Amino acid sequence: MHQQKIQDTSVSLTEVGFGAAVIGNLYRVTPVDDATAAVDAAWDAGIRYFDTAPHYGLGLSERRLGAALRHRPRDEYVISSKVGRLLVPNEQPHGVDTEGFVVRDDLRRQWDFSRDGVLRSIEDTLERTGLDRLDIVYLHDPDDHWRQAAEEAMPTLAELRDQEVIGAIGAGMNQSALLARFLRETAADVVMLAGRYTLLDQSALDDVLPTAQELGKSVVAVGVFNSGLLSLDRPAEGMKYDYQDAPPELVARALAIAEVCEAHGTTLPAAAIAFPHTHPSIINVTLGMRTPEQVGRNVKLHDQNIPDGLWDDLRAQGLIRSDVPAERGRGRE
View 1 (cartoon, one colour):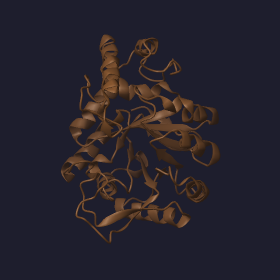
View 2 (spheres, rainbow, N blue to C red):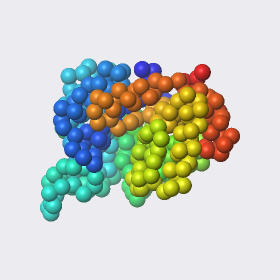
View 3 (tube, helix red, strand yellow):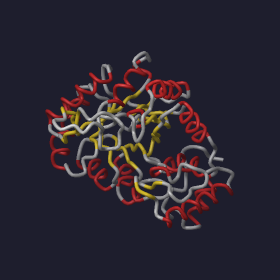
View 4 (spheres, helix red, strand yellow):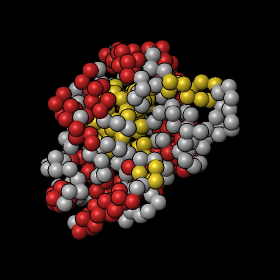
C-alpha cells in the first residue's frame, strides 16, 4: 500500500490506517479473537498505521493493539496514541463505562495536559501496549484546554520529538478551527481531523486545510463516514450523523450523492473513503475496523478507482463545495 510521509518528519503512513477505538469495545463487545484477527487482516492487507488512545475502552484498545502487534517487526509499522486523558482509579464505579465503551469502569478519565500528565500518560501507554516507543502522539480533544495544551503539553511533546523519542506530534479533534491554531501557533507536525472534511462537511476548507497547505503540515482524516450515514450504498432514515440521529435533510443529501456515485460506477462509501484524498495535505484516512470482514471491505472500497468526473459532477450539482480541489493524488482515471 502506498505511503506518504508526514512533512518534515521521518514518519510515513500508509494511505489507510487502522482505527483501534472499536476493538476497545466501542458501543458493543468485540471478542479478543476478533480484535486480534482484525489487526492481522489489516497487516496482511498492507496497512502499517495503527491508531489508539487511553480513552478507547479505558485502556483496552491499547492493550489489545499492543498484544496484536508485539510479534511484528517494530520498524515496519507506525503506531499513534494520545495524551490528555489520564486513567486513574474510579472511586465511585457503577459497573460499566458511561462514555460509549462496554467495559468495566474501575478506572475513570481525568483531563490533564500538564507536562507531568503528558509524561505519565505516555509511560502508561507504553506499559499497556508493551511496546518500546510511540511513533506519533496527539493531544486528544483539547477543545476546552487550549492554554495548558499549547503551553505545556505541546512543548513537552516537542522535547520528546527533538530527542527522537517520538517521531511526530500533533492534535486530534472533531473541530477544525482549533486544529488550525495548533498548526500555526505550536510545534505540531500533523493533525487528526475528525469528520470535518467529508462528502457531507467540508468546513475544514475554511481553516485547517489551507493552513496545513500554507505551512507544509500534514493531516490525517478520520470519521469519514460521519458516524455511519456515508457507510452504506443507499443511506436511509435512522442512520447516525456525528453521533446523533441524522436529520432528514442530510439523509436526502447523502442519498443524492449516492445516486451521483452510482452514475459514475462507484458507491457512496467508496467515494467517502476517497474524498479526503482530494486535498493535497491529507496523507491518510484512518477507519475503525472491528473484524477481518470489515478490514477486507474497507480495503476493497479504498482500492476502487474513483473517476475525477464524480467530484466535478458533485461540485456542479452543489452537493459538495465549489472550492473542493479539482485535482486528485490517488485513483485517477
